[in-house]
Length: 188
Image 1 (tube, helix red, strand yellow):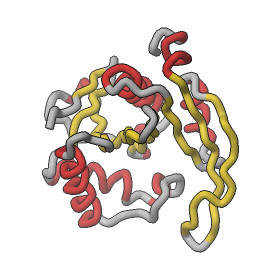
Image 2 (image 1 turned 120 degrees about the horizontal axis):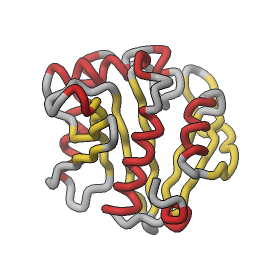
Image 3 (image 1 turned 30 degrees about the vertical axis):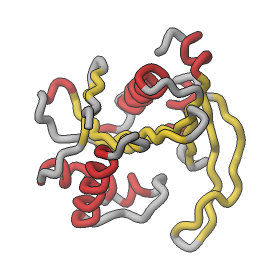
């Protein structure tokens, strides 16, 4: 495995480590009902988060690698910083992929999601040579819709009854960005 290490002005995106600190950090995101309300799963307990990190590390070993589930840390916190969230980039056929992120609630509203999106786009369009990236967002998650629009993603439409969760069907908004659109924006 060639580990991923992306550095932005304020954030570092790195591989997860199967350590108590990273497990607790992922649980702080995935275990928080307020954060999980926009995620495609129920809040997760600590043990499930530990299992998730184990899965992330297994996915990282695959050749070719098709899923990048990564820890997000603050640059100012140093090289062994505890994650404040996670980022994902999944590679699909036809040079396409999807991006996503989730942050600990106390870091919302600080512009970190925008920086994560830019870094993931750089990985996808630059390093991985993808042609198209997309993201799906809960229609009620207006903050993520703003982040994607700001990054140049365009709304493709509403996917009706995309997910069955918590006893009800949920729609999703799908956004996409093409490599030439990313390049036209100067890759930012």
